[in-house]
Length: 325
Image 1 (tube, rainbow, N blue to C red):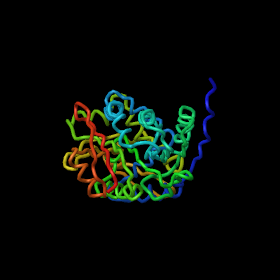
Image 2: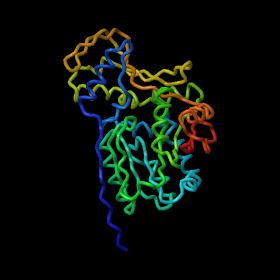
Image 3: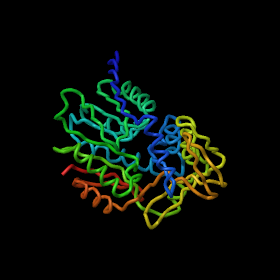
Image 4: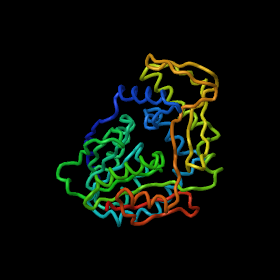
């Protein structure tokens, strides 16, 4: 039996340019608590390292969410219904969405969005080969910023459903998360829905192990940010002079990722000099954890009605189904 020809992949590129990257880095390093936006982790190498993190024994979120998705995929598909446009924020390798695509009825189109364009296009081509009848429109963009969503012709009135797995919502501060959800609710106005993976509050030891793995993959992922700055912006960071540090901040309810200077040193970035004291850090990421009630309250404040929530047997992770109010 012959196989239907895979459709062409119509990619759109709205990724931040090098100038934006440079400005964000220079601005962040000039702050009293030096910081760099976590979105810049995801160049091609960073995306590869993150996929490796997802397979680590200590890193429970991916395997827990994946198992939970498999368990409830049919229920999710019943709620989504036929002929929807599925939009995935932070699509990465687009592995989890396959669980939904295998259950959904006649999905009208799939729009994966990710900041790493090269990684995104590879994943989109793989999906196109495996789902030859599905329209796939990959968009390389920072999904936290405003950009025009390229909905395929004839599908402007189709139901839109955002898929946002992986607990990435926890990378935002509460005001940022609320603003992001408000933008999503506006995009989905008129009956659209959103599926969100949310990591739950749990024993501190479990959290610390997940972000400080024994193999040091998370450390390499964190340090790769400095490699990217050296290569793309022009800097002289010595990676051996920095170390990965990921403590739990109980007051804020988050894991924090830092790159800590091992020594007193001076670093030049795009022609500007920055001083580091021994023990001074660059704050690279937050990962907030929630209770189910806390996240539902946040969703309501941003214009969503919580429809249902699923959790695993150990209450490590949750998947929320929201409807734009």
